[in-house]
Image (cartoon, rainbow over all chains, first blue to last red; front, side, top):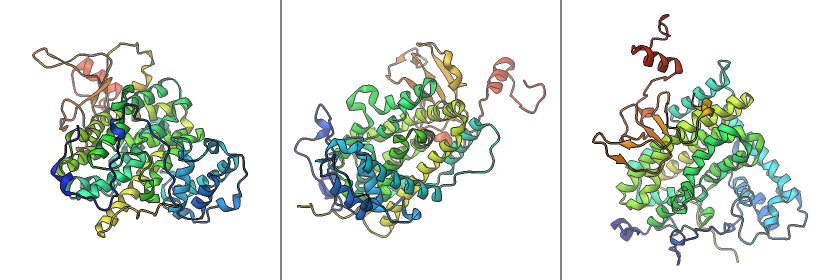
Length: 375
Length: 96
């Protein structure tokens, strides 16, 4: 059961709107997620999306309202574009509250999203070097070397060290709020790759995903371990609950995987992304665990971090040698995409870390203000 | 090597020596302490520390990256060392 630590009694965690649900989803036997609640719009494109999807999905949409007019350099962090992408992707996961599921395959909406995706990819290609020096001629060796160099490069402004040593309880809770947008559907975006792979490469991915999903035991699923952690920090574990409070730079993290996951042509980038994820996980998670314990977080809740240290030490080897190298062995033409996906993962991580640390150093919250609930 | 291990039979125990990283133990191997006691666990793949820096020994915790542990663990190296019981010197013409 939950351990009420002294921290929990004295902390009001004012920046995070704390709601203790009447029935904690973490304790409900089905652990079933409802659709994500609809947030307020953050600009013209997300407004057009939110207006459209509350109508009948048999209707046509006016595509002129769905054109994002920003610059490629801003695509990765623009609140409006990232929210519109996140919502349109969410139709493929748990759905959106009050929105007809048929919108998932609305041809015009998909056309509009394809334009947003082009703009996101253009932004990523500006930020992430696509080609390094000429390779050795052996694409498998190049990919292994490139992924290893990326993992050893440690480009992240060290968010994990800050959380380990200095973060306040409020800041640690904010970190969990941001991460909830991914961890409550942890592993799902990478699972899109399963039907696109075969043989030994598929086997490698399934080995990793089986751990992510607790070997089929609901309470062992990483998403559920995260719920227990959120619960310990007195956060609301409802799926999508904190969408309203996270900025575009946070949404980029999941949008990137959905982009790669939902398009077969990006399967190389998806595998590269997962590999970079796994290769940069054990050490930060051991730091998060220490931060959590320093702030008197509960032991049961710490399992989320502890389990990631051990599981991802295994996953990083399988992902590098069996999954990423295995895919490139089977499809050498994907080598560049694998490295691109990995670098995009590192970039999104660095953007996220920079955003949080920047706001905290300025003495501000990293969360968006709670919008008034629309009537 | 690991990715070429297609001929693996279900139920086989394999140990993969990862370059600059841990030993990956797959399959139903019994993990024992020296007094012969078997340690129960439900992990399908276990990464055993090889760099000596893990805080979770015998398991790997990713510390090899921070300590820049280096051991290429190539097939040539493994074969040479297991056959000759001498250090593998790739530049040595007699090595392989």
